[in-house]
Amino acid sequence: MTSGKVFFVGGDGQPHWCTGTALQSQYRNLVATAGHCVLDIEAGEATQSQVVFVPGYADGEAPKGLYVAKQAFVHYDFSVYDDLERDYAFMTVYNGVAADAAGVLSDTGRLGDNAGGQGFAWNQPTASSVRLFGYPAGPHPDGTRPYTGEHLHQSTGTTSWVSAPELPAERLVGVNSPFTGEGSLGSAWLTHYDVSGKLGYLNGITMSVSDTDADNRYDTGVSPYFDGETATIYKAAATSWTGRLV
Image (cartoon, rainbow, N blue to C red; front, top):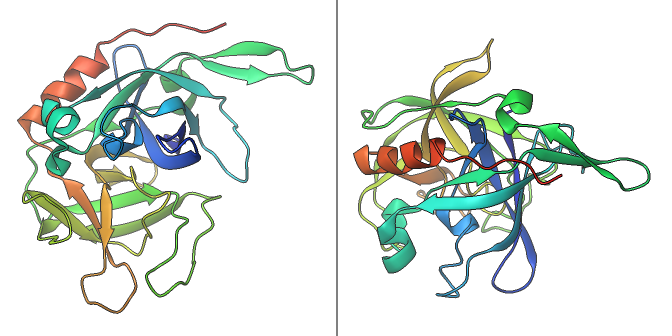
């Protein structure tokens, strides 16, 4: 239940979504996603607006409530220089809210209490086994659409250093994954994942996808490498209090 959708309004004024993941934190209020899901680097000025996290999203339902974002923690190089090697974000959220039949909102409590939270890992070796969780929806280059974005999907693979000529970045990690880009950006890469407990350690975030064998179908997810600088930003976000809206 830690995975969900991050809904937002982009710089184009249109609604979009990414995948997000609840993480362990002091106040149980933290979500990880891709940096460009909270900061509009294409517009070069504005952050995304009306950002909301919906854990456990499926078929339009929000079983654990809606969690409105308060503050996003991103790397300086990403926010200032659009450095895709730092395309990740840790977002604090307010307590969840839910509406009754009359539209009256009530407080549903803290994200971590309702949905749990994944651990966090950094400076991990490549050739690590990871499990990806995301909500892909977009088409492959050949136009096929194997996903609808209405349900959480998962895949497994082994990480490696990758070269993505289409991306202005050098220190990137890849993993075999059939996820298409739209919707799955922000997908969690969990290492040391325990299937029975459904918990592991976040060690990557899908910030792009690639077709490495040129067959017009995406086959690789791409993530920044999580190092000590990533951990510093995570730790700052993980000790930030938010509170409630209602």
